Image (cartoon, rainbow, N blue to C red; front, top):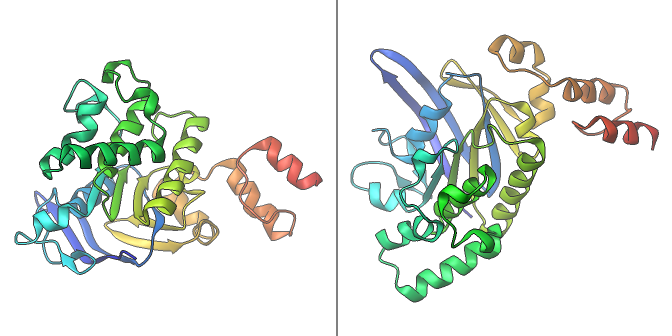
Length: 268
C-alpha cells in the first residue's frame, strides 16, 4: 500500500508566496481532491509534487524523498496529467504517445505489448489505439493522456483540473474510470479542481487557500464551511446546497446533483 507525505511545502515566485505551508499525508489507495479558487496555487502544487518545480526534502513517496539524488527513482512513481490540451502530445498518433514512457524505461517489445494490453483493458481504448491524435474527441484525448501517465504503473497519479470543458456525462465517465483505476492499480490519485461537483466521488477533499490546506475531510465535512468557501470564491452548486439542507431534516442522506434523482429520492 502506497503512501505520499508532504510536510511543510513552500514555494515562492518573484518574492510572492504561492504555497506557504502545505501539509498532508495519504496512506492508502484513494481519490483525493484538492479544491480552491483560480490562482490559489493548485497547479503549482501539482508541479511541486511531480518534481517539475525545484522542491526538495519535504515530499516523499514510500520513503523515497524528492531530491536531486532520488529524482529518477521518485519520478518512476509519478504519473501526471494537466488540463487537456493539444500541447501535451508529443506524437501524432496514439500508440506512439502511449508507449513513449516505456521507451524511456527501456521496456522490451514484449513488455510493451503486455503493458498496452493491460492499459487497454483498464481504460477501454482499443478503438482509438491506432488513430491520429487530431481525430480524437476531447474525452478520447483525455483517455490517451491518462493511459500515457498510467502505463508504467506509478504509485501516485496527479491530475490538474482535467475535467474542465467536459459535459456532465463525460465528467462522470472519467470519474468512474478513475475509481476503477484506483481499485485495479492500488494507486493514490490526487486531483485538483475549482468545482465542488468534481469532488462528489472523492474519498477525501482538501481545501487550498492562501497557500495552506485550510479544511480537510469528506464532502459533507467541507460543506459545513459553506460561508468560508463562498468567501474563497468556491461556488456551492444549488443542488448540492439543497442536499445538505434537506439532510439536516433527515429527508436526504446523500449529496444529489441531478434534479430528477432528488425528486425520486424524496418521493421514495
